[in-house]
Length: 397
Image (tube, rainbow, N blue to C red):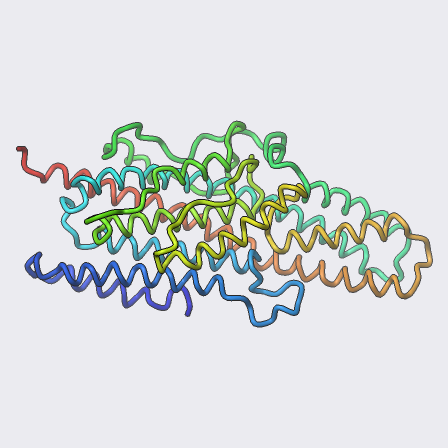
């Protein structure tokens, strides 16, 4: 089912119900039902992502695992889950309900985790820009080798672009941003140990912008993911049926989506990126996430041995085609054999198709990542305000 299929009715249901004046005791069963629906919708959305495409015979299908199109669906799932999570957590709810222990501590950890999401969004947006540079180099190769007849001039032009392309596709993660980009200021101010934050911190939220901003030289995508995985404790006892459960689910959703984006898109300093993080198998919503985690983890191990730029399907196909076309260019003698020219023509056509997919998908993907950035900023502000208001409204004992 589409990622957004349940959302309007689910959000509307919560909004209407919580605006009704009912005794709190009468809400308990409906609260449990809302939590159950949130878990079910989360599981359904990720199950759709794990389902294989119908046309797997093609080496590059529009919905291939870790393709641009697939990543766009993944980010859309994150946005849908985030909207439902915020509705379950704070829509129409008394602030005092989320400002009491132990939920206030869990939300404080969640807020810190969301800060890391913002920084990863900036790094991934920059990585998308680097893929677009690869696309431009591949378009030069296509333009040169589509000429008929193919002569020495066209092959030399293609060979020069191929050399730059292969260098970009196999660049080490540590080198990916250091030499080409300057430092930037961090995307979001930390609040130290102040779990509730303060008004001055949030007064500047409106000026935050998500663009293809570069990251500081000592920044590490792998360390950000590792930090996001810390303090992810499974709710136990009474917490397992309360609001701690959706906080835990949403934390895992954010970790998985950011991890998948970092694995697929070139990002600074990915050496040491975890290939596995613990998600208990007893949760129904977690089954598909665990399945995808295993697939991506295995691919990442291969990537680290090979030294390629990322797991994005289009980039991996581009790399294979580039290697083959370099062999053709290095051994080219005019006139080339007809059989070899047919083989090259097929490879150039596939490379052109990859460029087309990049042209159609990279900009929308980057816009979605920016939307995640802005959505997280807004939600973070709303949750922090609710925590502050809840503490103010609590009676002094």
